[in-house]
Image (cartoon, rainbow, N blue to C red; front, top):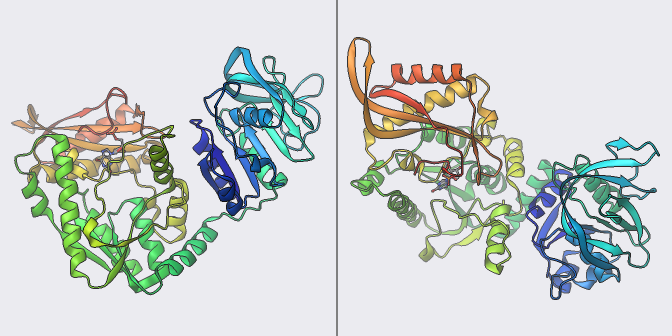
Length: 517
Ligand code: XMP
């Protein structure tokens, strides 16, 4: 396993993703992780991430010196290379020019790290790499034992190595996709230099998690709130395999789900997999609470609180439950750890419906805590969940509650469900579903005049939204083909009573958010 020490770069999570993609387990920890914790982790190799600070200033972050005494390989990236150089007796100073963006690196000699990895060959026979740089400082003097393995015009020491101790440093960022050979460089380090095998595969992850869960809960009973979303679905499938009938799921139908969603959840889990699922029909309770409420934040709060109430009621009917399972995944863990220690580079507000019914006194079991989203999806497929479910677009906890603008009425939810279903069905049919990150319909509580058949209609408006994004923090509206939009619009106006007009949202994020409320 690989230990990654985080010096605060926005790319640190990417390093972990790359290492995992290469089939090797790794964990991300703050740069000031202490010696005893490092020793206990017993890494086969250490990666020091980039960071935005300057090594030559006083009181900037350093790795615990133990990192260099463990006898395992170390790879320093950007700031990580600079701190390694500084900690081992080299010299780092501000560069005359900041380097930011594409650069071409010339690989010198025959370092184990970069040997035979190149994008081009220079006329003199050197390997050339197209890389992504982002730094203001540079290493000026090598520590004892080190050699130069790569250079750019602006950074004569763009890559350094002490082959004997297996310490490597690169000034560029191999973890970003702009560095075309980045994955190979990382794989070279972890597979060949650290000697880690490709053991982190979906099959092994499942086996490993099953063993851990069994060990953790023993013969106790476990409760899970199943929403039909990816994370809770995978937890259900995994726990079912691990502990079978000790698991009970509660699925709350809040009346704000997509067309047929409740039945799908029941058929996948209860009928096909044999999971014990209690379906609670709470539509009236939710819609009753939402009556007369128009403020979006207020609606969110009410939906969240009502969920907890309903879930709590069901849980209290079950005797002898000791554990509550949750679909927390690794990015949530990293973010909340970062937020707590003030070291977060990316702070995203979590707005999941739910939360812990506190007075229930349940212990937590979180079998996905170490996994990234793509890993969760892979093990979901491996556990036999339909890939349609596993690769579904995200759906907000408050559901259609934030897609029916203003006050939520039951008949508007029915209208919206039909329109949304047509949009999604056509996206799948046109093979566009997987090309957009999220797509849905929004119900606008205004009326517009239209003509349907021979009749003048004064009816509601449906807005379609489709976005492309990697992180959902920023997004671009999807440039769907006009003919496709035309088809969807015709179907909605013809097939959904009470809709006379369809519009397409062409607002990016920012300035818009993805949801309308
Ligand atoms: P926004 O609208 O903030 O959405 O651009 C970003 C992503 O978050 C989802 N979203 C939510 N998810 N509870 C959730 O669980 C919420 O209250 C909520 N609001 C937005 C949204 O669907 C998008 O994927």
